[in-house]
Image (cartoon, rainbow, N blue to C red; front, side):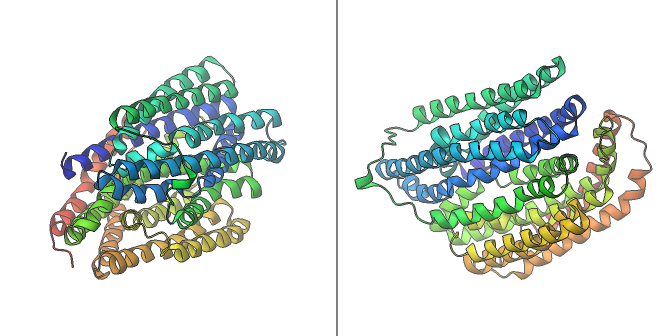
Length: 491
């Protein structure tokens, strides 16, 4: 299969996954808020973030294994491949045991933390049930995911996951609408998500010959940069998971629910943007050692395409967010979900954060975890320090201001590192592209704000019609920009 076909297959499958994930995210939370209340929705969102912290026990195994597997797969060395997978599986099992213990401790602590707003026993069991899927992931799928990712077959992961999410949406919607309690709903969701591991195992066992994950400590493969990869995972998780944790501690579950609704929308946008990078890490990882010059050219084109797409997406978001929020939270009456300041800050944070995706993809493809560790630590320190200070003054908005500060530093630094230390390119053009795209976003929103806001939106069909018109009109300036710059040579 050609490289272009692999890219298209991976991107298409991942884009479908993100669309279905977003669909579930938009359908289920309003139903949960209306049926069980904002406190319950805030509890569920917070538990997900707490559990995300515990997945740090993966200890960077997957990231280090993917980089190690490039060599084995390129050389078709099944013996080396099996040694790497055996070491990966071994460490995943150890991490899984530690995760199970940490999950039990989390269930006890979280039940105590939120007992004034919600039943302690309900919270306790919800943590255990929601974390059960992660335990299965540690024990049964971690090494398989690394293998499929390194072999440029993330479309397999995306396709199976899409099916499980569709089933989860249908079953959860029916259970909630029928009147079942939230614990039953989450139990059914966990069982559906667990079933996907059987499909992953079936595929890997039938498509990789002589696969053997038996661990022999006398001939064990030593995964390189595991702790350096862990540092990046730790800093990333601290930054992206800390908001709901801090809001739960310093504010309330209702504030967490409000934040979670906006985070859901912008998270869906982030996933759509990440779809363009799906599979690119493995492709760049292979090509860097074979044809550096072609890699430079392909990366520059990928970066230009990505930035124009980012500009179009966030222009549409800026124009369509207010009417969408009004429709989406129409029946959510137990908390004030109309927060214009949060919306503006989420928009700014999203633009700055996601402009790093191409550079981050290349850094991961090159396996530069150790070299970029100090910058990652500095970003986390900036984010957490500013968050702790700003939340006391501005509440949830302070969390976003802290993210803006840290993302401005780290995103620009990633561009510099990728250009200078991996691709040997000048940083001027990427930074100039940033400025052009950001200016085009601001100009397009300014021009389109009055025409869009003057149109009345009373229901979903009205919003869909408005979004189609907005999407088509705002695509024009970014399409022109892409046409002008896409095939320019890399310098």
